[in-house]
Length: 198
Image 1 (spheres, rainbow, N blue to C red):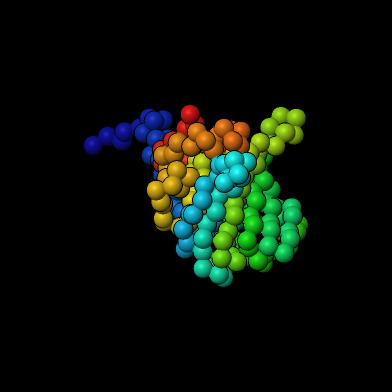
Image 2 (tube, one colour; image 1 turned 90 degrees about the vertical axis):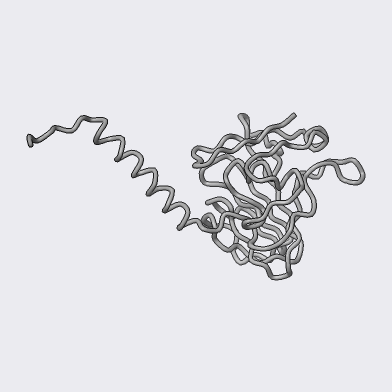
């Protein structure tokens, strides 16, 4: 049997898919917590409050003392008694956590899945993204999480529109009252994700 010389595609195609598989494995193992909290329930989605004004945050009911995780790698830019703001290192967004007793301090660098504090019983979460000219825009928090393969509560979805998982349509009343824009698309996702706005 004669030695057969391999073509470029016979070498690079298996190499490419092998690399994608290794990246997926490392991402899954290294960033195993891909949610705000491990246990709890989304009780309110962003949108009009009972007074008709915009409330751009989602609310998650948890047990008091439930661990709260970072859902971006970034820097803690504000820390209060029960508030954290984290600026992402990889995209122009600020994440807002309220109802958390912080275990990190202002200026700390955090990673995805890192413990940043414990819940006081109700965790409020919001997202704002920068656009050209340093304009901050409200983004539906559930849509931002979903478009990045993240969730409010680990392994749990609900009937609420903001907690629908990888296929989500933003509520029209929420869009209208808050002037929401769709989150910027993430750089890389392994599974199909659909986030729409009427």
